[in-house]
Length: 223
Image 1 (cartoon, helix red, strand yellow):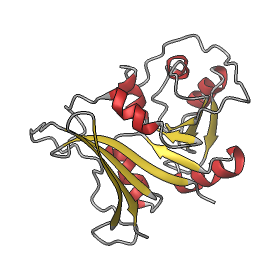
Image 2 (cartoon, rainbow, N blue to C red):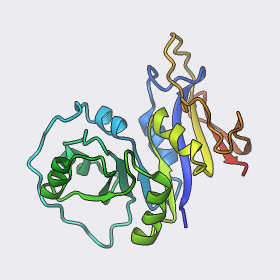
Image 3 (cartoon, rainbow, N blue to C red):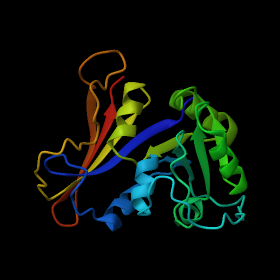
């Protein structure tokens, strides 16, 4: 069984995800409202959060002390190209109890060895790229994940939409107009509908004004 998947993003009024001043306190406050078992975060998002370059090695790879009673969500990161090598800093984030890296059969053995040496749990699932559908199913079977939030950039969002895995979309609209000619958006993809149609139908289930001029929109994906 595939977990319930919630996509959550912060955007400007003109739909930009890059260039806006994200209110992280408000963003995290809304994120805490969901009782989730895991958070799926793209590798580029992790690198940007920690101001790290792809392949940059930082930290000593300390063995973590995992508390079985810890109720924080599991952090799940697809990284079949082996870009993230700052796992000590990822573990230092206060939001997660542990880490699981999703790799594919194309992932270099050297990176799999690196993860072993750094005590980072990982799963090889998929051939050239991570098979997200199969990975979500394994998350449910092996780790008991019933619900999951996607906290990522537009590339990963587009992939999971094309595979028909999304159940809910949440958008925190910031009172800003970023402008510019950048193509950054929440879902940059040629097609989002897995059935081949041009649109994904949504049903509005919640709208709320927050703080000063921020708006939280919550939609259910019509399947």
